[in-house]
Image (cartoon, helix red, strand yellow):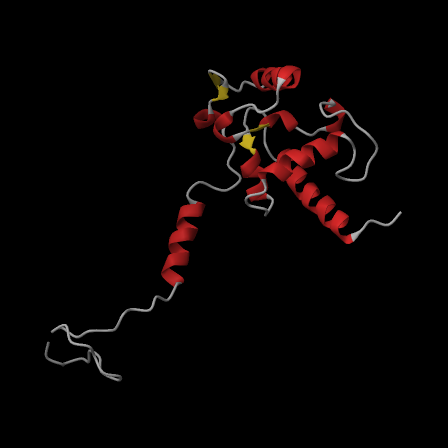
Length: 166
């Protein structure tokens, strides 16, 4: 059975998100937004939840039906939490997620994961800031008009030359 193009894109997107979920190590958590960003789909946090749900039903990769929390599956779904460390699953599923996390040594502050201690970073520390600063250096900004030392606009071709009086 052939898939439609939009179904192929969804499976590809979901597969990329699930690869990022598998990168979260024991004792660490990531948010739905972190997973989306790391997979190359910033702003698609809701789709991460869909991918996890689809994988649990065997739909994300076209496989047979599987149980979401099956250890044989190897998908650490319990390590994905809402913004700020909040467990978004309700009822017994939320309780199960908390139990899995606590068994891995993840600490909680009230009802939320202690993100300062257990947040997984997909990128090296400081890389984002350094890359941002480097990108800003490479942006050519238009100035409102170059001015000389007296505050007057320079004419085309004028500039500071060695030996020129200021």
